[in-house]
Image (cartoon, rainbow, N blue to C red; front, side, top):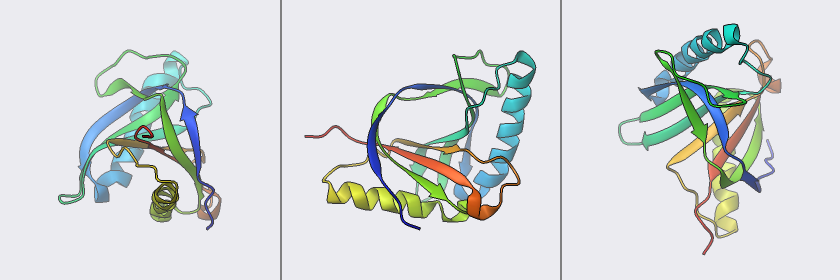
Length: 157
């Protein structure tokens, strides 16, 4: 797949999420459960809007394979927490972004494209957080699954 990598100014987004320290291999299982819990929390309150499902990744340790994942949904305003569902946000920041179409197992190709494009432009990624928006409902054929990847950038010198 060919990726169009863009640099944009991304506004802050409010999220409702379930957060967990997990391993990269356990992310798919965690995500399904997290999305269900957040939807069950937001739905009855009329807060589950048309925005995407989202996962924000922090504290990535490539040596141990551990990562902190916050998975849930974009919401129109901050929400109060309730048990495992807590408020979160993506930061307002300059980001490199691209869209991945296809199976999630290959989303790392989008990250590779971002890293390569930013190296060519002399920009450095801020790898303390990154996030993905999932725009395809469950059951979407793999070749039509849309994931938008966001990687914040360090300030240009």
